[in-house]
Length: 218
Ligand code: G3P
Image (cartoon, rainbow, N blue to C red; front, side):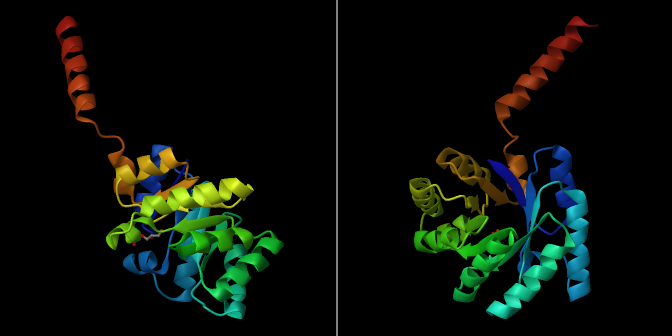
């Protein structure tokens, strides 16, 4: 399973990259705003800076909601760097745009997906990635992981190439369960990724190994 980090924070992206397990980055307008990035030029420069840090795909989201606007923005974003994946919302004009980009060989990430039907449409339109938001489904008492399972079955039934990118991941159990189900990618915060490191028996075991080594090497 690929690990993407879901942030626009350059320090956190660097930290995940340094860990050696990072396969890409996802951003969205809220995450850009959280870092205080505003204005077209600053946003563009920020995407370029992210692409400098990571080796893998970098999702950059369009703001337009009409077909022409999505195409114009998406083409400009795709020009920035071959790592850029144009992130398009799951709306009618978005689906049309996914097909356009797919025909042009431009990578896409269909975002704001909350149902299996939406995921099926995204795959048929040729999306590179589909982003079901599991945390936000959990927030409304609907099991987000059930949706990942359904999409996995549907995509496997027809051998769709679209990769399931589990998004809105909030904690390490989301990551583990996504891996069990067979999501192709997960995107989450640095805290969820580094939480995978932790086990109290690892800490206790290491402390004992080091203490025994120190005793026998006095
Ligand atoms: O990748 C989508 C993600 O940014 C949404 O996460 O935590 O805002 O639901 P969250």
